[in-house]
Length: 347
Image 1 (cartoon, rainbow, N blue to C red):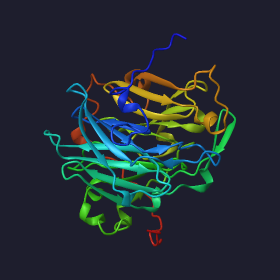
Image 2 (image 1 turned 30 degrees about the vertical axis):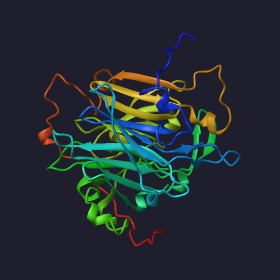
Image 3 (image 1 turned 60 degrees about the vertical axis):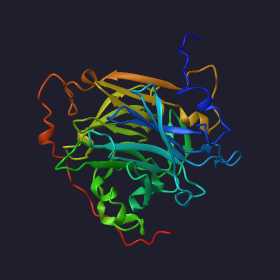
Image 4 (image 1 turned 90 degrees about the vertical axis):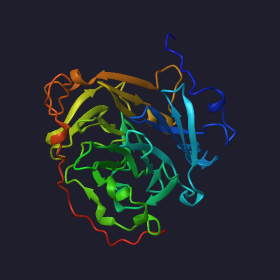
């Protein structure tokens, strides 16, 4: 039909299901770090949205697979997530990678388990995993119904979107939100990188997590943040791409709509910034879940926009030709609301 054919990465053999040792099973999201490595989060899950007739199940051990894009896509390593951190309903959907050292050995990956409502942290240097719990990883039941272009479905999903902020006073923030929510939260990465804090108690530091007062106008799936602290995310209910400058309050007046398209932006499930470009993947998930997918329509899209053009004149303006953004002066907003922490989680 004139569309470009997709090429398998890194090859067909790695994308042939059935061999847990050599193949990828089900990849929701990836992350390219500052060292040119592609981190692939393989959920090991089959039929994640199959419903009661064809229920989801884990058919291969979930794993992180890393490729070196600067060296002919060389396989750096495969790291299976310990079975002790995998629950019957585990669904690993998002990975965000935190690199700071020039030798690239000091890397941490933060992983969202959207259905078991947990976060998993991986230390590349020590090859260690640990798991974290917070009340803010749980879904908000009032937002479990989604409506896209008049098609409604129910989805009980917790922590989903992850975005790492710029360095501030030697530290970085991990911004996160639940897909069943219109709220935004954050945690200092210094807290979640501390393996000894969580090793024997994944509920060890409930006060490390913070919740902003403001809300989005709709649920959101993925989010990303550029080097200047501008967050970009989709608004599922309104088929929009929006942004927020993390140095300002998380309020409706500071959340800016950059694009709206009721055809092309149906269910934005992935979003990335690379250079001066914004990449968004849309999937029309509402039609898949409700068995309305038809092959004579475009159901999956990858959209690309120029950040300077998209943000010009807005509160999220990006101009790589000026000195408007001085990362040495980056000061993220810390306004947050208290929330109960005296809740006993089931281990």
